[in-house]
Amino acid sequence: MTPIHAAAGLAALCSLGAAAAGTIDLLQGADAGWAVAANVLLLPPAALLAAWAWRTASRPFAALAALGVVVCPLGALLGDRAGSTSWWLALEAAWWTGIAVVAWQSRPGLAVLTVMAAGSALFAAALLALKVPEPIASAAGLRIPLTIVWTTWLAADLVIRPTSAGLFTLDRPGEA
Amino acid sequence: MAAALLAGAVALALWVLAASRPSLWPSGCELGCANAERSPGPLRVLQLNMLHGFPRFAHLQARIDLIVDEIQRRDADVVLLEEVPWTIGTGSVVSELGRRTEMEHVFRRANGNRRTILFEEGDAILSRFPMREVTTTELPRGNQFFQHRIALAATLDTPWGPVQAVVTHLSGDSAEVSAAQIEALRDFADRPGYPGMIGGDFNARADSPPVVALAQQWTDVLRAASPPDTGATCCVDNLTAPPGTDLTERIDYLWITDADSSRIVEAGRILVQPRRVAEGWLRASDHAGLFAMIDLRR
Image (cartoon, rainbow over all chains, first blue to last red; front, side, top):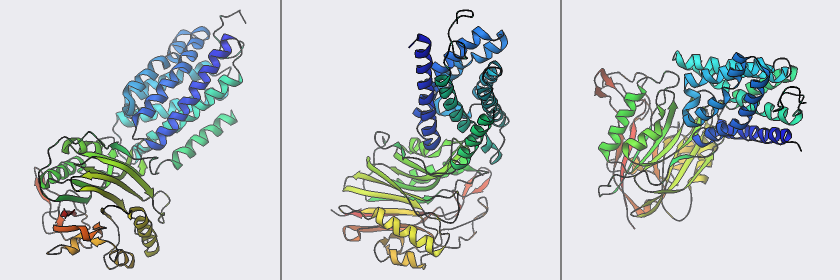
C-alpha cells in the first residue's frame, strides 16, 4: 500500500464515520456530540480535498474548496447550533461550491451531488438569515440528509479511485 | 450523473421519512441539575399539556415564563409535561425549564425532528429528586402517518422511597386506537415493587370505555380527591381571551397506581384562567394543568 492509498483509505474511513455520526444525529437530534463527531470526522477528507484542489485548480476555486478545513472545525465548535447558524451554512455552501467546480471535469457524479448539497446549504442559510417562519423554514433541514449522502459518496469515491492519476492524490504534477 | 441524481433522491426520501419520528433514546439531565432545596411536605405533582403551537408558536416564550412561574409558585417536586417543543427561537424548552426551575429533567421526542424540520415536540419529566432507570416505549400508531405516540418513565429516588413517574400523550384518533394505546401504556407503567404516578393528555373523555376500564385499576387522582375536581381540562382556541372562556372536556389525567400506600392531600385543576401580562391576558396553554399533593405513607 502506498502512502497515497493509505491517506485516501483513512479519509474514506473518516468520511464513512462522519456519515454514520450524521445519521445518528439526524435520528436523535438532542445530543450535540453526534453533530460534533460528524464535523470532526469530516476534517481529514476535507483536508485531502483541500490539498488536491490547491494543486489542481485555479486559485479562487482552490481557496473555496479548501474552506472545508475551516468549516469542519467551526461546525464542531458550534455543535448543536451549526445547522441553525446562517453564516456557517453560507460558508459550508461556499466550500461545496468550490469542490463542485474543481470536481466537475474529473468526477461529475461527485460534482452534481456537491452542487445539490451546496444549494441546500445556501437555501438553509437564506431561510435562517431572513427568519422565514415555519412551516416554510422546515425546508432548511434537507441539507442534513444531503450531507449524509454526500459524505457516503465521498467515502466510496476515495476507496474506488484513489489512484495518483485520479482525483484524490497528494502527488505533485508530473510525478504520476 | 444518473447515480448522483439517484443519491439526491435518496437524500430527499431520508428527509421525508425522518421528518417526524420519535428520537432514538431519551435525553436530558437525570442527575446533578437539581440544586434547589426542597421545602418539606407531601409530594407535589404538576401535569400539563403545554401546547407547542407549531407552526406559529404564538406567545411561546411568554407561556414558558408562565409555566416556570407556576412550577415555582406550586413548589412542584415532579412535573409531567406533554408537547414540550424545540424551536429555532427557543431552543430546547425542557432544558430551559430544567435550568430555570433547577430540576432534573428528561425528554424524548415524539414528533417532528429538530434536524430535518427545525421543530420537534415530545414528553418530559422534571424532578426535584434524582432520576434513574429512564425507560420509554412507542405506543401503537394512530391514523396519521407522521404522528407518533410515546410514553416516558423514570424512577425517582424520593425521601419516601422509589416512585415511578410516567408521562404520555395519546392520540385518541378512535375508540380502537385509544383502547390500544391505553392498554400498551398500562403494560408499560404497571411495574411491581413501588408506586407510580402517570400523567398525560389521553385525548379520551372520562366516560370513554378505555378510561373507565383504566379507572378500575389505577386511581384517578382528581376524582379521588376531597373535594373532587372533575372539571374540563381542554381546550381554548384563543390564548389571549379574557377570563370566562370555558374549557369543554376532560381529557387530561393524573393517576396513581398504588392507592393503598398513598393519601391524596389535595388535587385540582390549575391554570384554568388566563393570567394578566403586559399585553393583556395570556393562558399558559390551551389545556388546564393538574396539580396534586400526595402523602406517600411508608
